[in-house]
Length: 79
Figure 1 (cartoon, rainbow, N blue to C red):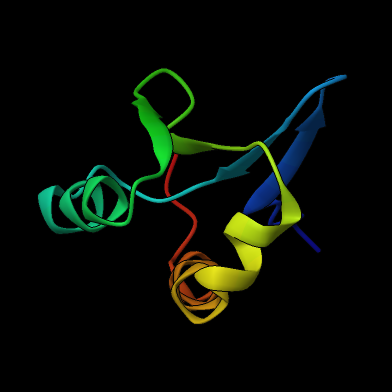
Figure 2 (spheres, rainbow, N blue to C red):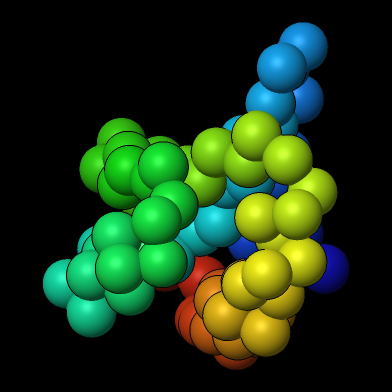
């Protein structure tokens, strides 16, 4: 069985990075910007890094984040 680690978390003292493996997509990038997320695409890791300063940011956009997780989960493993 091959591991499919499509999300990861990098906690810091004041915030947490939520990393999600998705290919770079202009639509996703635009949606993240429109919703006010501090996010960037890291090409080396083929993932978006989304910074959360508070839980309320997640609560406000919970359905959007869940849809990103589902997209990453459904994606085929390509290396």
